[in-house]
Length: 320
Image 1 (cartoon, rainbow, N blue to C red):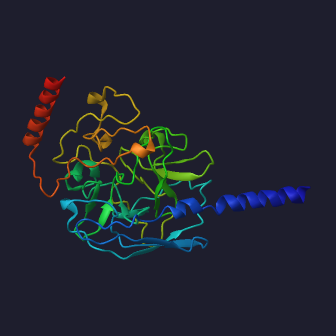
Image 2: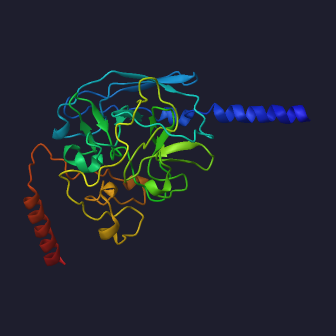
Image 3: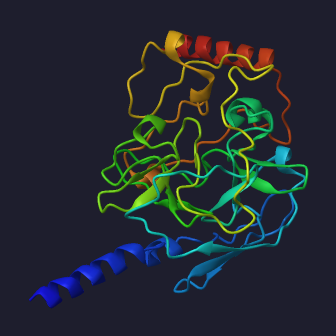
Protein backbone atom coordinates (compact mmCIF):
# COMPACT_ATOMS: atom_id res chain seq x y z
CA UNK A 1 0.00 0.00 0.00
CA UNK A 2 2.83 2.38 0.87
CA UNK A 3 4.51 1.62 -2.46
CA UNK A 4 1.27 2.35 -4.29
CA UNK A 5 0.89 5.71 -2.52
CA UNK A 6 4.51 6.54 -3.32
CA UNK A 7 3.96 5.70 -6.99
CA UNK A 8 0.81 7.82 -7.16
CA UNK A 9 2.64 10.70 -5.47
CA UNK A 10 5.51 10.48 -7.95
CA UNK A 11 3.13 10.44 -10.89
CA UNK A 12 1.31 13.49 -9.48
CA UNK A 13 4.47 15.55 -9.06
CA UNK A 14 5.81 14.48 -12.44
CA UNK A 15 2.59 15.56 -14.13
CA UNK A 16 2.63 18.84 -12.20
CA UNK A 17 6.18 19.70 -13.23
CA UNK A 18 5.85 18.54 -16.86
CA UNK A 19 3.14 21.08 -17.56
CA UNK A 20 3.95 23.59 -20.28
CA UNK A 21 1.34 24.97 -22.66
CA UNK A 22 -1.64 22.73 -23.17
CA UNK A 23 -2.72 21.40 -26.57
CA UNK A 24 -5.52 23.99 -26.65
CA UNK A 25 -3.05 26.79 -25.91
CA UNK A 26 -0.62 25.58 -28.58
CA UNK A 27 -3.48 25.37 -31.12
CA UNK A 28 -4.31 29.05 -30.53
CA UNK A 29 -1.12 30.14 -32.31
CA UNK A 30 -2.25 30.85 -35.86
CA UNK A 31 -3.11 33.73 -38.19
CA UNK A 32 -6.36 34.55 -39.96
CA UNK A 33 -4.62 34.62 -43.38
CA UNK A 34 -5.25 38.33 -43.92
CA UNK A 35 -2.59 40.55 -45.48
CA UNK A 36 -1.18 43.52 -43.57
CA UNK A 37 -2.47 46.77 -45.10
CA UNK A 38 0.81 48.67 -45.52
CA UNK A 39 3.18 46.01 -46.84
CA UNK A 40 0.66 43.65 -48.40
CA UNK A 41 2.51 40.83 -46.64
CA UNK A 42 0.75 38.01 -44.84
CA UNK A 43 1.64 37.04 -41.29
CA UNK A 44 2.84 33.55 -40.44
CA UNK A 45 3.42 31.70 -37.19
CA UNK A 46 4.20 28.07 -36.43
CA UNK A 47 5.16 26.01 -33.40
CA UNK A 48 7.14 22.79 -33.40
CA UNK A 49 8.51 20.45 -30.72
CA UNK A 50 5.52 20.68 -28.41
CA UNK A 51 6.46 17.42 -26.71
CA UNK A 52 10.17 18.25 -26.33
CA UNK A 53 12.09 20.01 -23.56
CA UNK A 54 11.54 23.23 -25.50
CA UNK A 55 9.26 24.23 -28.36
CA UNK A 56 10.26 26.49 -31.22
CA UNK A 57 8.10 29.37 -32.32
CA UNK A 58 8.72 30.76 -35.80
CA UNK A 59 7.15 33.94 -37.08
CA UNK A 60 7.67 36.64 -39.67
CA UNK A 61 6.31 39.26 -37.27
CA UNK A 62 3.66 40.54 -39.68
CA UNK A 63 0.27 41.25 -38.03
CA UNK A 64 -2.92 39.72 -39.41
CA UNK A 65 -5.09 42.78 -38.78
CA UNK A 66 -5.39 46.41 -39.95
CA UNK A 67 -2.56 48.71 -38.89
CA UNK A 68 -2.42 52.24 -40.30
CA UNK A 69 -0.01 54.91 -41.57
CA UNK A 70 1.95 54.93 -38.30
CA UNK A 71 3.08 51.37 -39.09
CA UNK A 72 4.02 51.98 -42.72
CA UNK A 73 7.70 51.12 -42.16
CA UNK A 74 6.97 47.57 -41.08
CA UNK A 75 9.47 44.94 -42.25
CA UNK A 76 9.26 41.17 -42.40
CA UNK A 77 11.32 39.42 -39.72
CA UNK A 78 12.58 35.86 -39.23
CA UNK A 79 11.93 34.98 -35.60
CA UNK A 80 12.89 31.47 -34.49
CA UNK A 81 13.15 31.06 -30.73
CA UNK A 82 13.23 27.94 -28.55
CA UNK A 83 11.05 28.46 -25.46
CA UNK A 84 11.11 26.18 -22.38
CA UNK A 85 8.30 23.64 -22.55
CA UNK A 86 8.68 21.91 -19.19
CA UNK A 87 8.02 24.84 -16.90
CA UNK A 88 6.50 24.02 -13.54
CA UNK A 89 3.27 25.99 -13.70
CA UNK A 90 2.04 24.78 -10.33
CA UNK A 91 5.08 25.61 -8.19
CA UNK A 92 6.78 28.56 -9.83
CA UNK A 93 9.94 30.20 -8.56
CA UNK A 94 9.55 32.61 -5.65
CA UNK A 95 12.03 34.97 -7.23
CA UNK A 96 11.56 37.03 -10.37
CA UNK A 97 13.83 37.77 -13.30
CA UNK A 98 13.99 41.19 -14.91
CA UNK A 99 12.96 41.66 -18.51
CA UNK A 100 15.13 42.43 -21.53
CA UNK A 101 14.60 45.82 -23.15
CA UNK A 102 12.73 44.44 -26.15
CA UNK A 103 11.23 41.01 -26.78
CA UNK A 104 9.48 39.32 -23.81
CA UNK A 105 7.07 36.98 -25.62
CA UNK A 106 4.80 36.37 -28.62
CA UNK A 107 1.12 36.95 -29.25
CA UNK A 108 -0.89 34.08 -30.72
CA UNK A 109 -0.70 35.67 -34.20
CA UNK A 110 3.11 35.61 -34.09
CA UNK A 111 3.61 39.31 -33.38
CA UNK A 112 6.28 39.86 -30.70
CA UNK A 113 5.46 41.35 -27.31
CA UNK A 114 7.91 43.97 -26.06
CA UNK A 115 8.69 45.24 -22.58
CA UNK A 116 6.07 47.81 -21.51
CA UNK A 117 8.70 50.33 -20.44
CA UNK A 118 9.61 53.04 -22.93
CA UNK A 119 13.27 53.73 -23.66
CA UNK A 120 13.18 56.40 -20.90
CA UNK A 121 11.73 53.92 -18.36
CA UNK A 122 8.32 55.57 -18.68
CA UNK A 123 4.94 53.96 -19.09
CA UNK A 124 4.93 53.12 -22.79
CA UNK A 125 1.21 53.90 -23.08
CA UNK A 126 1.97 57.50 -22.12
CA UNK A 127 5.24 57.91 -23.97
CA UNK A 128 4.42 56.09 -27.22
CA UNK A 129 0.63 56.32 -27.61
CA UNK A 130 0.88 58.73 -30.56
CA UNK A 131 2.90 56.14 -32.48
CA UNK A 132 0.45 53.29 -31.84
CA UNK A 133 -1.72 52.20 -34.76
CA UNK A 134 -5.38 51.18 -34.84
CA UNK A 135 -4.76 47.94 -32.97
CA UNK A 136 -2.32 49.42 -30.43
CA UNK A 137 0.79 48.08 -32.14
CA UNK A 138 3.82 50.03 -33.33
CA UNK A 139 6.96 49.71 -35.45
CA UNK A 140 10.43 50.42 -34.06
CA UNK A 141 13.41 51.87 -35.96
CA UNK A 142 14.33 48.37 -37.21
CA UNK A 143 10.92 47.86 -38.80
CA UNK A 144 9.85 45.37 -36.13
CA UNK A 145 6.13 45.45 -35.52
CA UNK A 146 5.27 44.68 -31.90
CA UNK A 147 2.84 45.18 -29.01
CA UNK A 148 3.70 46.81 -25.70
CA UNK A 149 0.12 46.96 -24.49
CA UNK A 150 -2.91 44.65 -24.99
CA UNK A 151 -3.45 44.22 -28.76
CA UNK A 152 -7.05 45.28 -29.06
CA UNK A 153 -7.57 43.51 -32.39
CA UNK A 154 -6.98 40.24 -30.54
CA UNK A 155 -8.79 41.15 -27.32
CA UNK A 156 -12.58 40.72 -27.41
CA UNK A 157 -14.14 42.13 -24.26
CA UNK A 158 -17.13 39.88 -23.69
CA UNK A 159 -18.72 40.62 -20.31
CA UNK A 160 -18.23 38.01 -17.58
CA UNK A 161 -16.56 35.64 -20.01
CA UNK A 162 -13.19 33.99 -19.41
CA UNK A 163 -10.42 35.34 -21.61
CA UNK A 164 -8.64 33.03 -24.02
CA UNK A 165 -4.89 32.66 -24.28
CA UNK A 166 -3.37 35.64 -26.14
CA UNK A 167 0.29 34.70 -26.14
CA UNK A 168 3.25 33.12 -24.41
CA UNK A 169 6.15 34.65 -22.51
CA UNK A 170 9.74 33.67 -23.27
CA UNK A 171 9.90 31.71 -20.01
CA UNK A 172 7.15 29.34 -21.25
CA UNK A 173 4.19 30.60 -19.23
CA UNK A 174 0.99 31.45 -21.15
CA UNK A 175 -0.43 34.97 -21.33
CA UNK A 176 -4.19 35.37 -21.06
CA UNK A 177 -6.56 38.29 -21.59
CA UNK A 178 -7.98 40.60 -18.88
CA UNK A 179 -10.70 38.26 -17.57
CA UNK A 180 -9.98 35.32 -15.27
CA UNK A 181 -11.53 31.87 -15.69
CA UNK A 182 -14.62 32.99 -13.72
CA UNK A 183 -15.18 36.01 -15.95
CA UNK A 184 -13.91 38.60 -13.47
CA UNK A 185 -12.08 41.60 -14.89
CA UNK A 186 -8.53 41.82 -13.56
CA UNK A 187 -6.19 44.73 -12.99
CA UNK A 188 -2.56 44.80 -11.91
CA UNK A 189 -3.65 44.95 -8.26
CA UNK A 190 -5.12 41.44 -8.65
CA UNK A 191 -1.82 40.03 -9.92
CA UNK A 192 1.65 39.44 -8.52
CA UNK A 193 4.76 41.49 -9.22
CA UNK A 194 5.28 39.70 -12.55
CA UNK A 195 1.67 40.37 -13.61
CA UNK A 196 0.53 36.79 -13.17
CA UNK A 197 -1.44 34.51 -10.87
CA UNK A 198 -2.32 30.88 -10.21
CA UNK A 199 -5.59 29.89 -11.87
CA UNK A 200 -8.21 27.70 -10.18
CA UNK A 201 -6.26 24.60 -11.29
CA UNK A 202 -3.15 26.04 -9.60
CA UNK A 203 -1.38 26.64 -12.89
CA UNK A 204 0.55 29.89 -13.29
CA UNK A 205 -0.36 32.31 -16.08
CA UNK A 206 0.24 35.94 -16.95
CA UNK A 207 -2.66 38.26 -17.75
CA UNK A 208 -2.91 41.30 -20.01
CA UNK A 209 -4.65 44.21 -18.29
CA UNK A 210 -5.50 47.82 -19.04
CA UNK A 211 -3.00 49.22 -16.56
CA UNK A 212 0.79 49.10 -16.33
CA UNK A 213 2.70 46.83 -16.93
CA UNK A 214 -0.06 45.55 -19.27
CA UNK A 215 1.50 42.20 -20.29
CA UNK A 216 4.52 40.78 -18.41
CA UNK A 217 6.06 42.59 -15.45
CA UNK A 218 9.00 40.23 -14.94
CA UNK A 219 9.82 36.60 -15.71
CA UNK A 220 8.64 34.00 -13.20
CA UNK A 221 10.55 31.31 -15.06
CA UNK A 222 13.84 31.30 -16.94
CA UNK A 223 13.84 32.52 -20.55
CA UNK A 224 16.14 31.16 -23.28
CA UNK A 225 19.85 32.09 -23.18
CA UNK A 226 20.45 35.65 -24.29
CA UNK A 227 17.08 36.95 -23.05
CA UNK A 228 17.93 37.26 -19.36
CA UNK A 229 19.83 40.54 -18.84
CA UNK A 230 22.57 40.74 -16.22
CA UNK A 231 21.10 43.99 -14.93
CA UNK A 232 17.59 45.34 -15.30
CA UNK A 233 17.35 48.24 -17.73
CA UNK A 234 14.40 49.81 -15.89
CA UNK A 235 13.91 49.02 -12.22
CA UNK A 236 11.35 51.71 -11.42
CA UNK A 237 8.69 53.52 -13.42
CA UNK A 238 9.47 57.18 -14.12
CA UNK A 239 6.41 59.26 -13.22
CA UNK A 240 5.48 61.67 -14.53
CA UNK A 241 7.21 60.97 -17.80
CA UNK A 242 9.15 63.93 -19.18
CA UNK A 243 6.91 65.96 -21.45
CA UNK A 244 3.80 63.89 -20.77
CA UNK A 245 0.55 65.46 -19.65
CA UNK A 246 -1.88 64.08 -17.13
CA UNK A 247 -4.35 61.77 -18.91
CA UNK A 248 -8.11 61.87 -18.47
CA UNK A 249 -9.80 59.84 -15.75
CA UNK A 250 -10.16 56.24 -16.93
CA UNK A 251 -13.37 54.26 -16.98
CA UNK A 252 -12.41 50.60 -16.75
CA UNK A 253 -14.94 48.04 -18.01
CA UNK A 254 -16.97 46.48 -15.23
CA UNK A 255 -15.70 48.82 -12.52
CA UNK A 256 -17.26 51.87 -10.94
CA UNK A 257 -15.69 55.23 -11.56
CA UNK A 258 -13.78 56.31 -8.47
CA UNK A 259 -12.59 59.67 -7.29
CA UNK A 260 -9.55 59.13 -9.45
CA UNK A 261 -8.75 62.78 -10.06
CA UNK A 262 -6.69 62.84 -6.87
CA UNK A 263 -5.55 59.21 -6.68
CA UNK A 264 -4.87 58.21 -10.29
CA UNK A 265 -1.25 58.01 -11.37
CA UNK A 266 0.15 58.13 -14.87
CA UNK A 267 0.66 54.35 -14.76
CA UNK A 268 -3.08 53.73 -14.87
CA UNK A 269 -3.48 55.24 -18.34
CA UNK A 270 -4.00 53.17 -21.44
CA UNK A 271 -7.41 53.00 -23.07
CA UNK A 272 -8.84 55.94 -21.13
CA UNK A 273 -9.68 57.96 -24.22
CA UNK A 274 -11.83 55.15 -25.66
CA UNK A 275 -13.24 53.90 -22.33
CA UNK A 276 -13.49 50.26 -23.48
CA UNK A 277 -16.67 48.52 -22.45
CA UNK A 278 -17.46 44.84 -22.59
CA UNK A 279 -20.18 43.42 -24.83
CA UNK A 280 -22.94 41.06 -23.72
CA UNK A 281 -22.76 38.71 -26.72
CA UNK A 282 -19.63 37.43 -28.36
CA UNK A 283 -21.28 37.79 -31.77
CA UNK A 284 -21.62 41.52 -31.21
CA UNK A 285 -18.12 42.18 -29.88
CA UNK A 286 -16.38 44.82 -31.94
CA UNK A 287 -12.71 45.65 -31.94
CA UNK A 288 -11.66 48.69 -29.92
CA UNK A 289 -9.25 50.74 -31.97
CA UNK A 290 -6.83 53.49 -31.07
CA UNK A 291 -8.44 56.93 -31.46
CA UNK A 292 -5.00 58.52 -31.66
CA UNK A 293 -4.14 56.57 -34.83
CA UNK A 294 -4.69 58.64 -37.96
CA UNK A 295 -6.17 57.15 -41.09
CA UNK A 296 -4.44 57.78 -44.40
CA UNK A 297 -6.93 60.56 -45.16
CA UNK A 298 -6.84 62.25 -41.77
CA UNK A 299 -4.62 64.65 -39.96
CA UNK A 300 -6.94 66.19 -37.40
CA UNK A 301 -5.56 68.61 -34.84
CA UNK A 302 -6.63 68.35 -31.18
CA UNK A 303 -8.56 71.64 -31.53
CA UNK A 304 -10.44 70.31 -34.54
CA UNK A 305 -11.29 67.13 -32.66
CA UNK A 306 -12.76 69.17 -29.80
CA UNK A 307 -14.83 71.23 -32.24
CA UNK A 308 -16.18 68.06 -33.86
CA UNK A 309 -17.13 66.61 -30.48
CA UNK A 310 -18.90 69.84 -29.46
CA UNK A 311 -20.78 69.92 -32.75
CA UNK A 312 -21.92 66.31 -32.35
CA UNK A 313 -23.01 67.02 -28.77
CA UNK A 314 -25.09 70.04 -29.84
CA UNK A 315 -26.57 68.09 -32.75
CA UNK A 316 -27.62 65.29 -30.41
CA UNK A 317 -29.29 67.85 -28.11
CA UNK A 318 -31.28 69.30 -31.03
CA UNK A 319 -32.45 65.88 -32.19
CA UNK A 320 -33.72 64.86 -28.75
